[in-house]
Length: 123
Image (cartoon, rainbow, N blue to C red; front, top):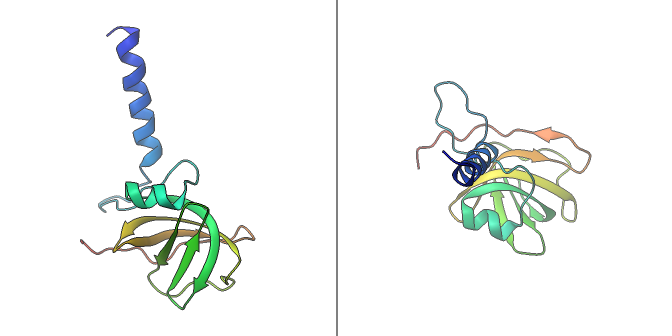
C-alpha cells in the first residue's frame, strides 16, 4: 500500500475508534461517544454523540437541552440527578431514540458525572 492510500485508511480507523464508546463484554453497544461535544443538531442527525448546552426544562426523568443549533429532549432510565434546573450548563452523551437523546452519561456544571441505568432495549 502506498502512502496516498494508507493515510485515508488510518484516518478512517482513528475516526471509528473515537466515535465508538467502550463496550462491556457480552453487551451490544448502543451509545456513540464523540471525542468532544458537537452541536445538538449534528448529534441528532448522526444518531448520537456528546452535546454541551443549557437545560431549558426538566422533569423527574427527562430534560430539554439546547444550544445555538437546536434543542432536544433527553430521557434517562431512572431519575435525573439532583442539581439539574433550567438555565444550568450541562453535557450529555447518548444516542438518538424517539427523536431525542437517551442519556448514557450526564456531566453537571460542577463536573459531577452521572451514569443513568443502562438502556437494554433492543429497539
